[in-house]
Length: 165
Image (cartoon, rainbow, N blue to C red; front, side, top):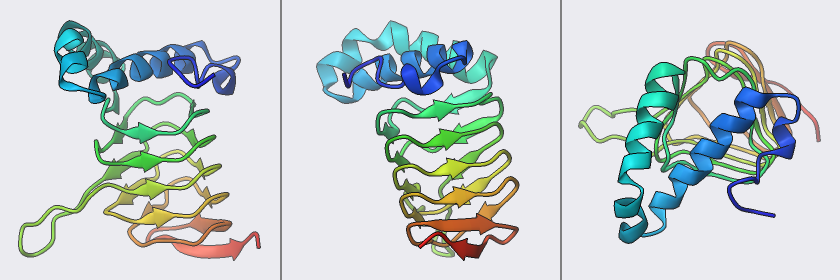
């Protein structure tokens, strides 16, 4: 079932992850139409204050995320509103998905993360990079370029440690 509970089983044993993802999926409904956004204004205010300010998990409701998104801890995480995340991905604490500004002042879109990607704690993914399906990004990596499917990515700056394929 893809709906507001599409991440429920992925976060089994993680009540906080379940509740944050449920709140995110409800808030995400506001992206479906202007009418939904208008109806959900009080909820979106609650979402921003509770999830983003109090819990410190800036998972903006405009983010496109496939089903089965696992959120482990989540504190200190920032996910840019134009980020796209595939299905069955894992995000850990202090993960940042941001855009970047070029020398002309033009801001890039957010990252495009494939399905089944495991993202370690304290990872920074900056710019409109593409991370292929079935990749793993090691803790503390700073990713500023794209990587193919099956990549094991580590370091600052991030580099390919090895490929699964």
